[in-house]
Length: 86
Image (cartoon, rainbow, N blue to C red; front, side, top):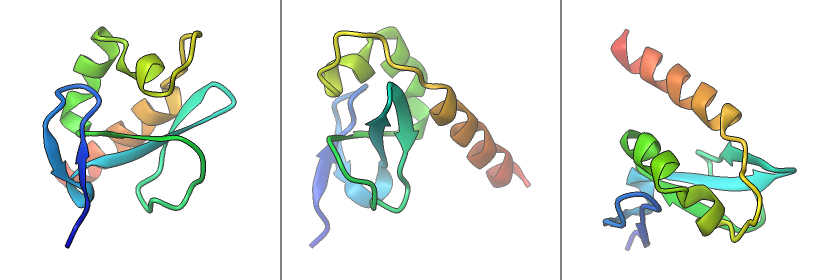
């Protein structure tokens, strides 16, 4: 059976293979598509990235008082989006 997880933006529950796993490293939100990085994790539908930014879901999910950088996550999502259009 596949574990169920909640998207940090829309809060809907999906299987872990339908969501992108995220971790934080030195104030950066890092995508972890292989689910191998350690530390506190969060889950996100790639299509919900904008909603997560508006709702400040990243800081809340990672229990961080500071704003977290999402540059690496944005670059990853753009790359995946470009690949899917080819």
